[in-house]
Image 1: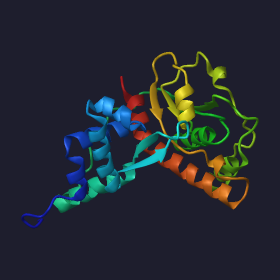
Image 2: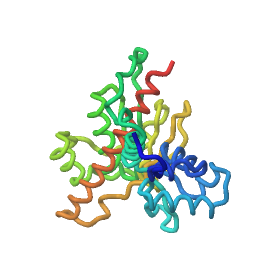
Image 3: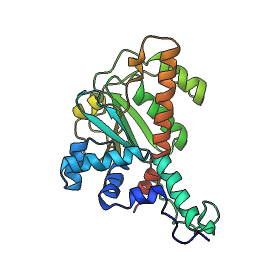
Length: 259
């Protein structure tokens, strides 16, 4: 058993504050700007900024400069670090709470046969959104209808993204071409996910009120011309997208199982 008077784990000390917990729950759904978080929390922006700094110092939240407006920034929740913190807090309380040590969970209700549709949007539909489309399709084995489009599509997929998908994930998208968002007018989507800040500002509303999510991911093509630096940028971007998609899967499972 734990020693009497032992300090609470760092994750609990950070997450237990009501405002910081609210910020974590909002960022669990989408990357957001500080003014958006202040509006959602109903608190002054300087107070929200203070608590965001504590969450950043604790390694739970990261921040990236907006590619749409360089004066702005997007905050992102590191769910892997949160999972580690939760697991560590449980283990610190009692060994029986160590992940994997408890009794098996009861079987859930049967999954409803419902194919969800997810659309990924970026500016050119040449790098980030085709990577996300391909990785979601791979993770769900076609049980989710994954699509991608751009607000100003380029002439072809970026070779850096094509290479990373082929070499690291075994996915061949060489024959795919960028598509314009307008070609999807009237299509029904359950989720619309923007992957760049410019696309978030320009993405129109869709019928049937899909869940809107934003992932603020820098453009890997901006790292430079073709070469090793370009390949590293696309490798990092694909890994970031793959992590975010792994975190999205339980959300899709829950939505697909809803009555």
